[in-house]
Image (cartoon, rainbow, N blue to C red; front, side):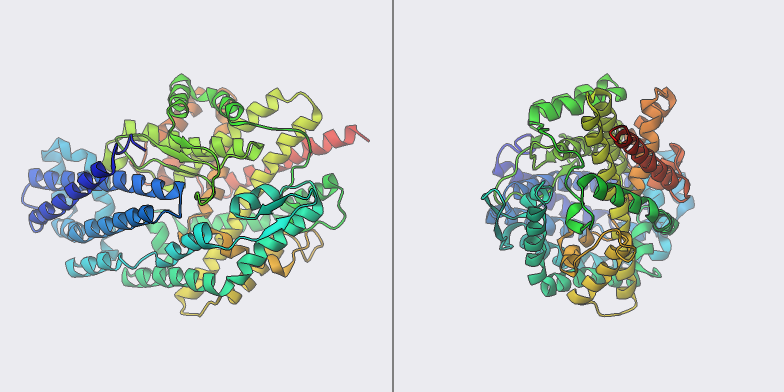
Length: 587
């Protein structure tokens, strides 16, 4: 973390500088249209403030992530929130004033001052948002309300990572474990079926205890989204959220429609899984254990090596940059008490480097997560070096392509080196589970979000119990419970409360769209198509220089059409064909 700030005093000094700039920026109010030079100066000041805020935020968030129980780190994170709200308030006049200047005059300014060209796309995003931009007073009021936004998600984060009274259970081996989120992820894969049931019963039983509270937290988030959508004159929350990056609602609607049309493929997978596990009554707790058991251990040194070898098709520059990051401690690797669960990459410190948080468990899933998060990190690394700050920050819509692309390359690397049919089936089975979790599961989450946001937009009440019933119906439909494919206990229907992504509206659908796109890109690159490689690397370097849907479409994939989803489902069926062919040889 010292690469960001060597001391806490250095962080404080940078925060103080941001406060100084916040006072200076008021001189721009009413003068953005004075001249091209004045507009450029004011845009550069705002960009510098934002860049500084992002650096402050990465430090604060990562400090908090490494130990969520340290009060000082929470206070630092809260200071960043206050600084962000302060920045939003003092710059709230920018967009309304740019709209008053108008597109024609802005174009003349850009023609007169070539240094303004780097701001062309950000300015265009403001100008086309005219129907949803308020006057100065309205924008200032919305910025002030930022102090209260996200309260539900903040409360959830503290509950889930620091305050949750995780249960202790005794496994069949006699080992007693505290079933926090990392332990749940690990032990739900147990080879012992009774242990798997014990793990899910205890874990979701704990979430059931907090069903009412988490329902209030999530409903608060839904209502917040509804209010902002109404005030900005959008017909609903999904349109407002997707409009931030000009993603057509047709993308989400097509994804959900194609996923539902492809449920027979998902059910085929569950039936194959039941056969390979030797169970006649497939249950929800049978989804996670590997299809082939073996002594497959992947300590971090091996995981690093495999990931670096996997991304070799992306070129020596990509490999060298990733290796440098792994060697330079850009990553917090192992789980600890009170450390934030899961994994993430933080690439917003534009002039430093990305940071990666892992909870590495020495299993193959940890290796795939390593490849995934370093896909994000390298996306930031490349974009930050190719783009000016104002167009370097990319949207999640493209971010998850970079991460799932690396997972596809890792699978290709592992299959080429597999020495036995069992090992091959192990990796193929892992790929199937990844497709289930990243495509079908995230699409199910997206359908859940679309439903509950629509109900909140209509002013309907939503309690924790109502959320569980809604989620339960989807869970059982996707898993073919009525068709006898997977039986799901109602006790597991509080799973929605365990998913942090619901506090970031319409975030999860992008995992599903991205894996559909990345699968096509990875197939092309792995085949040696150099033009496809350049298009893909160009997509990464493009950062946020255009709308993400447009960037991906220009790279060769239109996510508002059925084609990429149908291609992914076909790939899933091919993997199952190969597994079934291996199984047939053993008869």
